[in-house]
Length: 142
Image 1 (cartoon, rainbow, N blue to C red):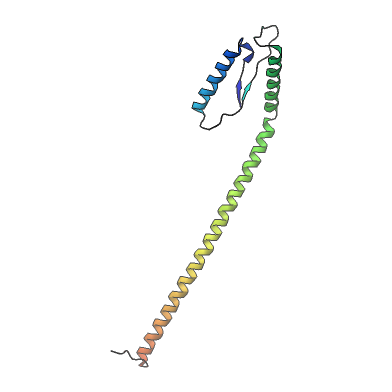
Image 2 (image 1 turned 45 degrees about the vertical axis):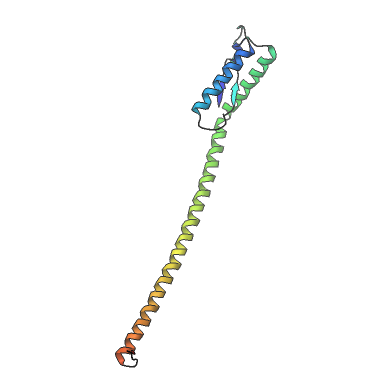
Protein backbone atom coordinates (compact mmCIF):
# COMPACT_ATOMS: atom_id res chain seq x y z
CA UNK A 1 0.00 0.00 0.00
CA UNK A 2 1.46 3.33 -1.05
CA UNK A 3 0.13 6.51 0.55
CA UNK A 4 0.65 9.95 -1.01
CA UNK A 5 -0.11 12.16 1.98
CA UNK A 6 -0.56 15.92 2.43
CA UNK A 7 -2.28 16.28 -0.93
CA UNK A 8 -4.37 19.07 0.58
CA UNK A 9 -1.28 21.31 0.69
CA UNK A 10 -1.13 21.78 -3.10
CA UNK A 11 -2.56 25.10 -4.26
CA UNK A 12 -2.55 24.25 -7.97
CA UNK A 13 -3.58 21.09 -9.77
CA UNK A 14 -0.43 21.43 -11.89
CA UNK A 15 1.77 21.05 -8.78
CA UNK A 16 -0.19 18.00 -7.66
CA UNK A 17 0.11 16.41 -11.11
CA UNK A 18 3.87 17.00 -11.22
CA UNK A 19 4.38 15.53 -7.73
CA UNK A 20 2.16 12.52 -8.52
CA UNK A 21 3.99 11.95 -11.81
CA UNK A 22 7.37 12.15 -10.08
CA UNK A 23 6.20 9.66 -7.45
CA UNK A 24 5.03 7.21 -10.13
CA UNK A 25 8.24 7.63 -12.13
CA UNK A 26 10.46 7.01 -9.10
CA UNK A 27 8.38 4.04 -7.94
CA UNK A 28 8.62 2.46 -11.39
CA UNK A 29 12.40 2.52 -11.03
CA UNK A 30 12.47 0.68 -7.69
CA UNK A 31 9.47 -1.69 -7.94
CA UNK A 32 10.30 -4.69 -10.16
CA UNK A 33 6.67 -5.24 -11.24
CA UNK A 34 5.20 -4.05 -14.51
CA UNK A 35 2.22 -2.31 -12.88
CA UNK A 36 2.36 -0.01 -9.89
CA UNK A 37 0.32 -0.87 -6.81
CA UNK A 38 -2.56 1.47 -5.94
CA UNK A 39 -1.48 4.86 -4.66
CA UNK A 40 -3.82 6.36 -2.07
CA UNK A 41 -3.95 10.17 -2.17
CA UNK A 42 -5.00 11.50 1.20
CA UNK A 43 -4.52 14.16 3.81
CA UNK A 44 -4.22 14.35 7.56
CA UNK A 45 -7.04 16.46 8.97
CA UNK A 46 -5.77 19.36 11.04
CA UNK A 47 -8.20 21.87 12.55
CA UNK A 48 -7.67 25.53 11.79
CA UNK A 49 -5.04 24.97 9.10
CA UNK A 50 -5.54 26.57 5.69
CA UNK A 51 -5.83 23.90 3.04
CA UNK A 52 -5.10 24.54 -0.62
CA UNK A 53 -7.74 22.42 -2.32
CA UNK A 54 -11.45 22.97 -2.68
CA UNK A 55 -14.12 21.47 -0.44
CA UNK A 56 -15.03 18.66 -2.87
CA UNK A 57 -11.41 17.56 -3.24
CA UNK A 58 -11.02 17.54 0.52
CA UNK A 59 -14.06 15.26 0.86
CA UNK A 60 -12.43 12.83 -1.58
CA UNK A 61 -9.15 12.94 0.34
CA UNK A 62 -10.93 12.30 3.64
CA UNK A 63 -12.90 9.42 2.08
CA UNK A 64 -9.63 7.91 0.88
CA UNK A 65 -8.21 8.35 4.37
CA UNK A 66 -11.15 6.43 5.85
CA UNK A 67 -10.67 3.68 3.24
CA UNK A 68 -7.00 3.36 4.22
CA UNK A 69 -7.91 3.31 7.91
CA UNK A 70 -10.42 0.48 7.25
CA UNK A 71 -7.75 -1.49 5.39
CA UNK A 72 -5.36 -1.05 8.33
CA UNK A 73 -8.05 -2.14 10.79
CA UNK A 74 -8.73 -5.31 8.77
CA UNK A 75 -5.07 -6.12 8.13
CA UNK A 76 -5.04 -9.03 10.59
CA UNK A 77 -8.01 -10.66 8.84
CA UNK A 78 -6.27 -10.22 5.50
CA UNK A 79 -3.10 -11.71 6.96
CA UNK A 80 -4.97 -14.79 8.16
CA UNK A 81 -6.67 -15.13 4.78
CA UNK A 82 -3.29 -14.84 3.02
CA UNK A 83 -1.80 -17.48 5.33
CA UNK A 84 -4.67 -19.85 4.53
CA UNK A 85 -4.19 -19.21 0.81
CA UNK A 86 -0.45 -19.88 1.08
CA UNK A 87 -1.14 -23.08 3.02
CA UNK A 88 -3.58 -24.20 0.33
CA UNK A 89 -1.02 -23.46 -2.40
CA UNK A 90 1.68 -25.33 -0.48
CA UNK A 91 -0.51 -28.41 -0.01
CA UNK A 92 -1.32 -28.45 -3.73
CA UNK A 93 2.40 -28.30 -4.57
CA UNK A 94 3.10 -31.06 -2.03
CA UNK A 95 0.36 -33.22 -3.61
CA UNK A 96 1.93 -32.69 -7.02
CA UNK A 97 5.39 -33.69 -5.72
CA UNK A 98 3.91 -36.78 -4.05
CA UNK A 99 2.16 -37.77 -7.29
CA UNK A 100 5.39 -37.31 -9.28
CA UNK A 101 7.41 -39.33 -6.76
CA UNK A 102 4.83 -42.13 -6.75
CA UNK A 103 4.72 -42.19 -10.53
CA UNK A 104 8.52 -42.24 -10.84
CA UNK A 105 8.80 -45.00 -8.21
CA UNK A 106 6.22 -47.08 -10.07
CA UNK A 107 8.01 -46.68 -13.39
CA UNK A 108 11.40 -47.49 -11.84
CA UNK A 109 9.91 -50.60 -10.22
CA UNK A 110 8.45 -51.70 -13.58
CA UNK A 111 11.79 -51.21 -15.31
CA UNK A 112 13.59 -53.02 -12.47
CA UNK A 113 11.34 -56.06 -12.78
CA UNK A 114 11.58 -56.05 -16.57
CA UNK A 115 15.41 -55.91 -16.45
CA UNK A 116 15.67 -58.61 -13.79
CA UNK A 117 13.18 -60.93 -15.46
CA UNK A 118 14.97 -60.50 -18.80
CA UNK A 119 18.31 -61.18 -17.10
CA UNK A 120 16.89 -64.26 -15.40
CA UNK A 121 15.52 -65.55 -18.72
CA UNK A 122 18.87 -65.01 -20.44
CA UNK A 123 20.69 -66.74 -17.56
CA UNK A 124 18.23 -69.65 -17.60
CA UNK A 125 18.65 -69.99 -21.36
CA UNK A 126 22.43 -69.88 -21.06
CA UNK A 127 22.32 -72.44 -18.22
CA UNK A 128 20.09 -74.70 -20.32
CA UNK A 129 22.41 -74.50 -23.30
CA UNK A 130 25.43 -75.10 -21.08
CA UNK A 131 23.77 -78.09 -19.43
CA UNK A 132 22.80 -79.57 -22.80
CA UNK A 133 26.34 -79.19 -24.08
CA UNK A 134 27.76 -80.64 -20.88
CA UNK A 135 25.51 -83.70 -21.03
CA UNK A 136 26.29 -84.20 -24.70
CA UNK A 137 22.80 -83.86 -26.00
CA UNK A 138 23.52 -81.00 -28.21
CA UNK A 139 26.29 -80.47 -30.63
CA UNK A 140 27.72 -77.33 -31.95
CA UNK A 141 28.13 -77.52 -35.68
CA UNK A 142 31.57 -76.53 -36.71
